[in-house]
Amino acid sequence: MMDASHDLPTTDGPDLDLLVCPTCHGDLARTGNQLCCGSCERCYDVTDGIANLQVARGFDDEDHLERWNCEECTGAHMIEHYMAPLLENLFPDADRAALRLLSIGCGVGVDVEMLNALGYRCHGFDVGNRVKSWAHRSNPRAYTRAAVQCMPFRDGQFDFAFLNCVLPHVGVVGDSQTVAKDYAEERARAIVETIRVVRPGGYILLSNPNRLCPVDLFHRRNEHSHVPRFHRPSEPFLQSFDDHHRAFVVEGGCRQAETLPPANFWGFSENSKSSRYLVGKILQASIRGYFDLLSARILAPLRRGALNPWLIVLVTR
Ligand SMILES: C[S@@+](CC[C@H](N)C(=O)[O-])C[C@H]1O[C@@H](n2cnc3c(N)ncnc32)[C@H](O)[C@@H]1O
Ligand SMILES: [Zn+2]
Image (cartoon, rainbow, N blue to C red; front, side, top):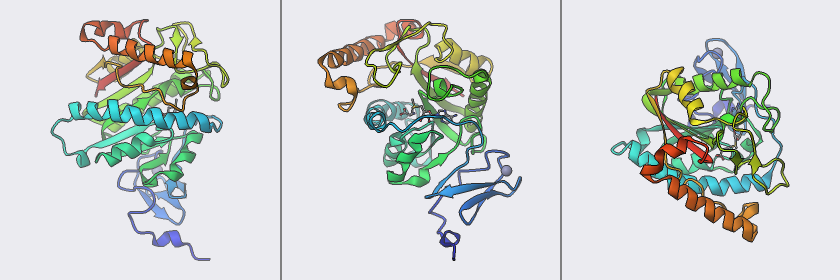
């Protein structure tokens, strides 16, 4: 039987201008339904146009359509009301089509789709089950299955990379808030890789529930719980501002790290479980008001401490 993929035009299938071998960073070429490395000769499968370049441990989650629908809405809100204005501020005179953006652990991938629609060149990758959502995206070429510990990109290829609640989920057992024995090594590899693929002077944006705040509003103990997760500020699952500063600036050699105002990041979706209950709605409105307060310039120092539940850190590479 003839393999039609041999004759695919170069605009179909994985983006070979961008992707390299995740093992040795050699150039990849398409051979049938695989991408093969010209240097180390390893081959990687391509399924439905999406390359599987995962060579490190993945994320062992289960399908959860309700949660993914919710992430579709909160992600769209975040891009429109937070990320788009931030990018305008960081790159005021730039030609959007010349800027390379990377969504690390992009999940359902609405962020990638919207940023491309705004004229940026954005790529996303992930390893969990959320990759199934990419089949419905307008441009599957903008997505790759890959792990943050071993990225399939050249050094300094991106102007801006972002990890929206990804680092806490690297090095955990299954899809839990319990870390595996080697979690510190896995996260260290993820951080080294993130720094590697961003150009000097480019930016890395990290966001996650703040380890120092004992109330985690963004993870639940289990699927059926509506109650925020209470935890010790010393727990290893989450990160604090100092954790990021140490990893990226002190040890990673980046220029600086600062917290950003959390206002407008979270627009709680109408689809979310808590939006269906009056108590949930009141809680969401209070959280939004509190984030507006924490965004006042005079209160900026508080964002690093225990009073801030959602940490947003901008690292200058
Ligand atoms: C809480 S979700 C956030 C998804 C997305 N960034 C968003 O804001 O909707 C965490 C994501 O990290 C991804 N992830 C976990 N470990 C990863 C790894 N080692 N490499 C790449 N992605 C990973 C998961 O598959 C999941 O999509
Ligand atoms: Zn190779």
